[in-house]
Length: 212
Image 1 (cartoon, rainbow, N blue to C red):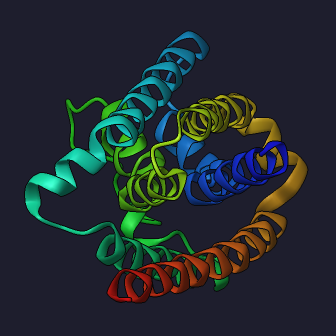
Image 2: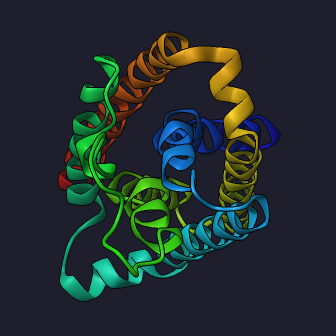
């Protein structure tokens, strides 16, 4: 059980970290908050991360119940969620920001809007990919309290890392540079694509198991 718990915890952490992709968000965060003072930038970041974390945890805790009300089986969601994550991974493989998690260029919100809510928290930090990931991982836990607790902890840890990375956004941009950030994004996209295929295979296997 300890081995399964460690493997599940690592899978959850890596999956969510790749999907949230704080390194990829950093350039956009710097651009969105470039005119803000240091204090305002810290406040914007704190609000964005807390909102994204809250929405993600909501789907972690209540997502399966919501699927049940809609009549969607976990097998169907595992397959569709894997396809969705693969679609998220494809642009990353080409060094681009996933379409499902916000624009790569252009204006970040209309005048008067709080960029901490849109587009930073949703959909950049908590988009369809992150929501699909926690639902798929919650399904993998099979309702075991220990595994669900590990998933909860991994989610909090990922957004903690995200806060740290974005907090050092300016320094990160200077140290890595645009080219290295694109390289990191491609590697993360490859990892996410492999995880997405695994989710689809697991969903198909679980579906045929129920037919026997």
